[in-house]
Length: 409
Image 1 (cartoon, one colour):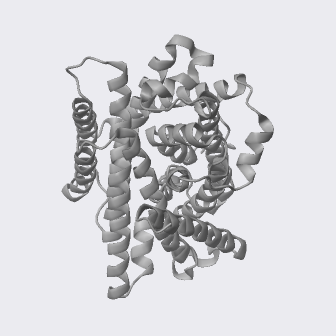
Image 2 (cartoon, one colour):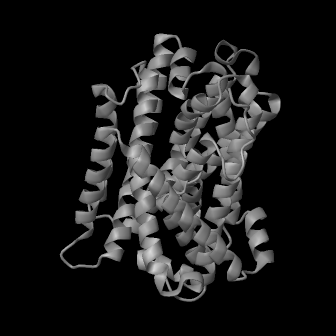
Image 3 (tube, rainbow, N blue to C red):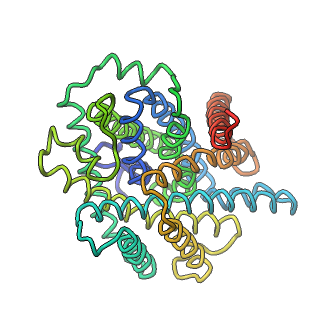
């Protein structure tokens, strides 16, 4: 047996899957819009998101390593009375279904607007690219041969992310203003949905289900907890820096200039200081890569979560398992074709995830405090306080965004 090695930037574990899942087209879109419309003012939302993701994903990792349960199975075991189990199943499945359908809409639209911007033939409408993206995801999921292709696409996303980080450095932004935006909360007029979107695109509810299962493949007992914590912390902080770099480059390119972001070509402007005329090609391919890879992982996550909480076998060949991911893929495709403006639809998808986050987080906290499930590894007082703070802030912002949408505030 090989001795376990400490994770490094070049050998990250399941935490890298969490980062790869949230650095998708929704992140590029939401962060670009945040920077273009509000400058550095909402960077504090990403600071909160990074901290919240580390707190919740550490609990998810501890759950998987200690109990060998996924979050769905743990919830089923925790709520043993019929009434409690039925309510839990309804709430969790609804949250995952709604959240992943919205997220899938953003994934498919993100990939589609990337290709639509790159190949501008009039005969190829956005709906054509939506259908092609959905069909590609469907065939890869059906064949079960998506892993190699996903690695290639994630590599492209990583290259795009490095590009944003490099651009953010060479444009020499105003560092004091960035630090103020990161640590001094503010809420400019009309920014509440964008702020919730920033949180929803980073603290992704379905990642809690994915991570609890993924860590079981890497670590077999409690001796891996320290490495798992380092892994998720390094991975999420890196992802947060990438998201912040997108906000910064967009703020420099658009905020206060009178220009607006309307499509993928618009996103490319923020990369021109580094890439010049190649910026449009890179951003288009990057959006497609991020979208198609996330279009595979989101339906799979929903299938794992739903199968777990119903006590079904988690098998890619199972008809029940396939019906779940097919439903999510179909829902995302239909919503993508309804004629919504792509950028607004993607932003809404991230906001929906932010609103649904407290539901899943509350259930996670409940399981993490169950001695029946966790034994002696239940949450410490510090973990509970941190988790409750995350839930309360996310819940407050979610309620405020709903009130904003219906016109009360």
